Length: 191
Ligand SMILES: Nc1nc2c(c(=O)[nH]1)N(C=O)[C@@H](CNc1ccc(C(=O)N[C@@H](CCC(=O)O)C(=O)O)cc1)CN2
Ligand SMILES: Nc1ncnc2c1ncn2[C@@H]1O[C@H](COP(=O)(O)OP(=O)(O)OP(=O)(O)O)[C@@H](O)[C@H]1O
Image (cartoon, rainbow, N blue to C red):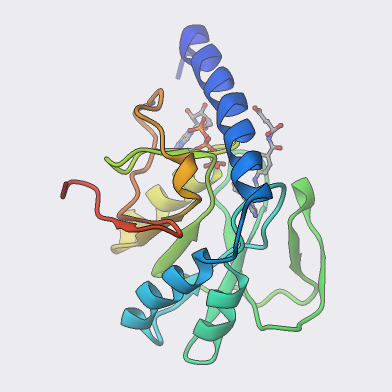
């Protein structure tokens, strides 16, 4: 696809503004988010789940992942190569992790699985289910690939302050099915 310089500029400035807002929310975090996420995930016990190892000021899903791991398989993302979908390696609380590309930790021993529910990190979201990430297109490619075979349920996990009125969109942006914040659970399309 021909790159669109205006859209790239818009996304770049949306990312830096969103990162500033997330940093401020992170500094004031009271830890309430993981409880909201656990309550949602309790409805899907035993379904293969992917979480993430938080980097920068991402909201921490680890307590909810640990609880889910007591009931079924949980994985974390592993970057194979730039421009390729993510892969997901089985995660257990207290397992040995090593630094992966871009600083996120990955399991030392890789046991890959296919998640059906994905807890998706983000910089900004809209109530309509649009998402802004770091610009690698990793989750967009991953959700597109997973959804070409079977439904994959994407749960955006974020601070309430990461909500944006609108996000510059590309045709390849994969929508979120649900958004969980420490304050509320948002079903895009139902307002
Ligand atoms: N915790 C966590 N783990 C994750 C992700 C994530 O978003 N959060 N990923 C989700 O994909 C993958 C890592 N992806 C990343 C992609 C890009 C950058 C990054 O630093 N990008 C540059 C800008 C690059 C550009 O604009 O071309 C930056 O933000 O400065 C970081 C992580 C896999 N693991
Ligand atoms: N399914 C796809 N197939 C091919 N290219 C894609 C796909 N999804 C995204 N891209 C490309 O990847 C690049 C980055 O996408 P985008 O800016 O939406 O990333 P992001 O959602 O912010 O990042 P991430 O998903 O890694 O957190 C864009 O140039 C986009 O066109």
